[in-house]
Image (cartoon, rainbow, N blue to C red):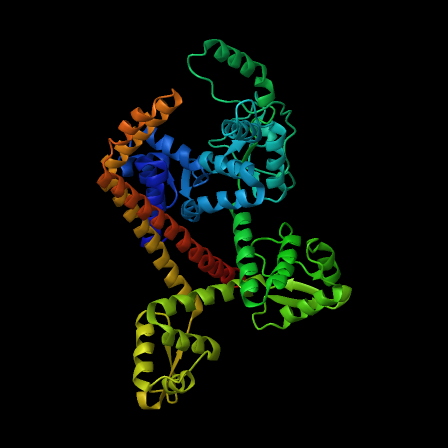
Length: 534
């Protein structure tokens, strides 16, 4: 892991889980697999605190354990999952877009708690939804469990590995292992346990209402056995499935910008038909016939089979090569070239970065090198129609930033400069890796700036929160308008302006983090796709 990635991981851990978890997590990033005693000694942290920190990290799938060949347990970090914390808001927003408020809260609860049982998620989400409703209304558990089932059917959530039945049975004579081995059967990974979920969401009771509180305790005792029906079966977010959805949306958006809405809808239909059956690392989707695509088109799109065939032919002949033809049966078999699509998206990101940093003429040279692969300086000047001095400056500028590289092709073995060709070219993969590290550094800088802004105005924020709490309690008790106005005037006009500026700046920084993460996702997907190809 690079220095930029390690710094970003540290900032994310500290912000979400605290200083001790950050210390333990970053130690595992730096040193690799380590036993408990070594972690406690080398970090200078008490053993009980290290245990709690490891529990938090394991609960959130950031750390795993394994048994060393000498018999002791050692812990190791999943470095890529540390960086996924940055993407949590996007997972939640996607669930809200696809499955509404209920889906949003299910994903939010699973991300907040790491792992939860089906019954615990349903009850918590139903209670939260009931809190936002008018008095007298509540959410039925069956509604939440239906959305949970939909998320499992589309593989956005999955079961966690659990104890095998032989190990989970009590009273076995064989000596227990040092650490339990967790397994899961693939066919049960998305199967919802049969739990008798009857009831509705409840509101929080006031602390002074003792009678209702005692009744609530009795109800809890009654429902105790039901809540244990899925005990030991935990669920978690499947991040790869969310990433697959993000990739599909990026491909659809690119097709829509390049061609038209109908073309993007055809591609969306093809991706939807193969979203569950195609692995996230696959280079192509499963082949689909034009007849299957026609039958699966949304009802609102009243296009004929002939028009669909014309669109599919156009998409297959397009230079982008997002859609390819894989056979002629069933009116033609078509696939989506996922690796090609991701490579095109990553290349367009590189081009836009070059244009933003160095201007349109540099971007023209960069596109020319991508198209022609290798060119001499004189050829670059001629093809790009840029004066020699400017072309040389731009090429050297991009060369110094590692966006282009120089390849020497000698005519003679002595590599004499006079008898050597010097060709400029673009290595897309190395440029993507370099820009990815810059993106990590940018996000770390944005987080540090946001923390600095909040720290500088901490006193003012606390004062504002206290006054808002007083106003809310007074409004609940039916205070007069003049009293509320007096409380509001405790914050002066300059202080109010300062708070507004702070909120605006923090919102800009948050939005920038999400935008940079979009670029990170495209570049990471491209780099990972090249690994799977190799």
